[in-house]
Length: 136
Image (cartoon, rainbow, N blue to C red):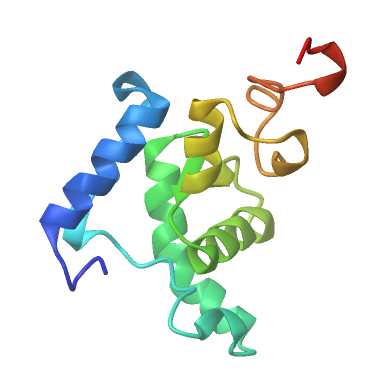
């Protein structure tokens, strides 16, 4: 999608991310938009059975994320999430890997208590609905 649809689609995704995290919390990668680096997990590579090769390819993305010094790496799909999360664990990198949908749900106040596995301690309890404390 990054290369197929180009910068217009990238701009739409950037708008969504900035809307849910706040413009002041958005940290850009370089290069970005349609020139951003692939994480190395897509196209079947995640399930290929070659984890060392996949991680070696992913080092480019890991270095790109590290350069931002961001606390979170937001990923748009399952393959990206699994690859970027694996890279952070394998290389002991400091970022939290979080699905974009998780942040969208969190921003809407509809993320359930059992859907917070990839959130850091700073976000785990944000807008948690507790039915036992409700008057509904």
